[in-house]
Length: 232
Image (tube, rainbow, N blue to C red; front, side, top):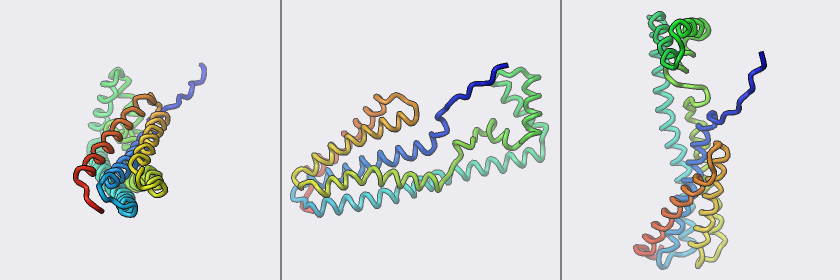
C-alpha cells in the first residue's frame, strides 16, 4: 500500500488571521478616516490633526485588545463549561455517551457497526478528546486563546495605523487629506492581498472589498469634517 500524501491545509490559520486582518484593517480605516475628517475641517491645524490621530491610534489599539480579550474570553468560558459538562456525562453515563458518539459518525456516512466500533476505540483512547472534537466541534487550531487574540489585534491595529500617522506627520498640512487617503487605500489593497494569500483565497475580491469600504469610510468622514468642522 502506498504511503498517504500529506496535504497542506490553511484552516489552522483562521483564528490568528481573522484577528490580525481585523486589527490592521480597523487601524488603517479608523485612524486614516479620523485624520482625513479632522484635516478637512476649516481652520484645522497640523498639530490638531496629529493630536487627534495619536489619540485614535492609542485608544484604538487598546480598544481592540480589550474587545478581543473580552470576546474570546467569553468563548473560552463557554468552551470550558461545555467540557466540564461533557466530563461529568462521561463519568456518569459512558455507554450513553458512546452511543451519542457513534450516532455522530453514522450521520457522517459511517455504517452503524463500524460507527459503534470507532466510537468504542475513540472512547478507549481519549473519551473527552473525542467528544470535544466530534460533538462540541472544539479543535486545537480553533480553540479560544484570549491573550493571544488581544495582543495580535492590538499589534495589528498599531501596524495598520502607524503609516498614515507618519504620512500626516511629514506631509504639508495642505495635502494631508489626499496623502493620507492615498496611503490608506494602497495599504488596504496590500492588506487584502496578503490576507487572501495567507488564507488561500482569491486575491482580487479581497482587495476590492477592503479598498471599497475604506474609500467609503474616508469619504464620508471627510465630508462630515468639511461640513461641520470648526477650528481645532
